[in-house]
Image (cartoon, rainbow, N blue to C red; front, side, top):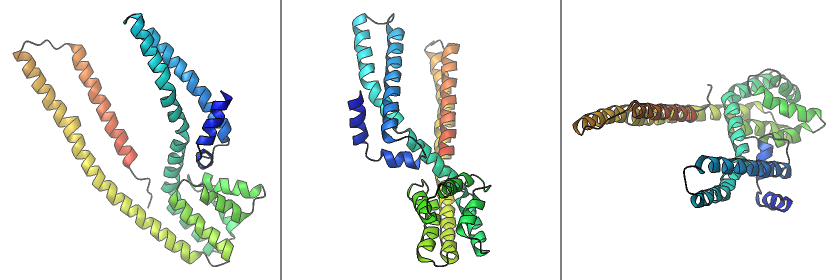
Length: 273
């Protein structure tokens, strides 16, 4: 088992950066070890469930083939799902930062224009500016541990999950490296971010129109006409339609409705202008 974990750790070259971007304190070795253990437990549980569900329904030969197939294929699927979990965390962090990055950048700009040092500006931003506060707090905590301000900002920029946030941090890093005035470039960066968000809103509007058209056809028109035709044809051929069939159709429609709600929510840009 240890050899397998070591091989997987070497093969997953980008895992260290992914964990850092997800703000996980685990090392790649620890995360792979944990993932392999969970994969084996989940695969055994899934195999046992498949056995108990099919033991009385199928001949034993087919049951054995089935559980062997489940035990062989499920670990790969489960492992790749679990190893990709940090990417979901990164995506969540990105959406959180993108929602507040414009106002957070304007707050930093205001503080810097008033003459406040960068360190004090970051400390103030970490104490209560919306969701972005916790991401500024990560930078401030690193500075408080003795890391130079420039290095802390560069590290935060490198491992940030948000391109927009990286642009703001880059202006602060350039200021510390060159000693130039940051207010002009930061204003231009924030204006660029605002324009990007306007474009994202327009693109979302176009995408929403297409989704609504698809939703009306698949979730409204097709089920209603399809069910009506099904009932009419069933009456001609004397097909008995039980309540269980109708409940299955209702359940399917509910699943489709939920899918579209999740799809629309996922497509919505995290934008605050």
